[in-house]
Amino acid sequence: MNIILRVLLGAIGVFALFGAAQHWFSFDAAFTGRGIAAIDDMGRANLRADVGGLFLGIGAFTLFAAFRQHRGALVATAVLLSATLIGRIVSIAFDGFSAPVAPPIIVEAVVLAILGIAYWAWGKKPEGL
Image (cartoon, rainbow, N blue to C red; front, side, top):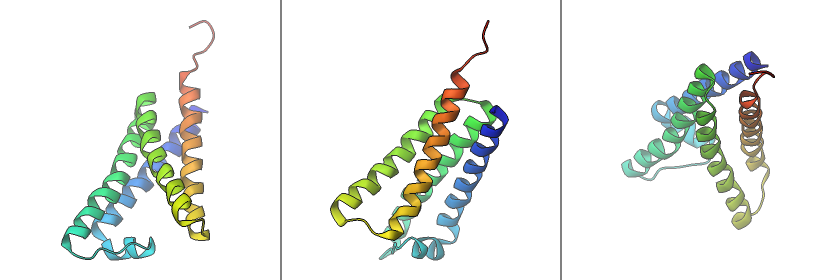
């Protein structure tokens, strides 16, 4: 079970780092696909920092958790992902639901579930220890 969780978390971390790189170096493709447009240099800098930085944080904490089997890093990742999920829920509350919003919500919920399972599994100790 631990190996499966570590592989899953490692894959999530790598994909998140690829997401960060995409938002930094393939700016137009990344943000156009997400329905985001920057008006000027300040907008591009903010999107790279805010979105790319979020992906970098998620990737770094998730990879650290996978390599070190560190529960605290799982919590840090869960906090970042929960914040994005809350933002999506607030957006639905203000703008209403639309079909393109569903896939990211599903991905974030699945990743949060994996984080929760890992947190639970890594907290259990074999009997007698």
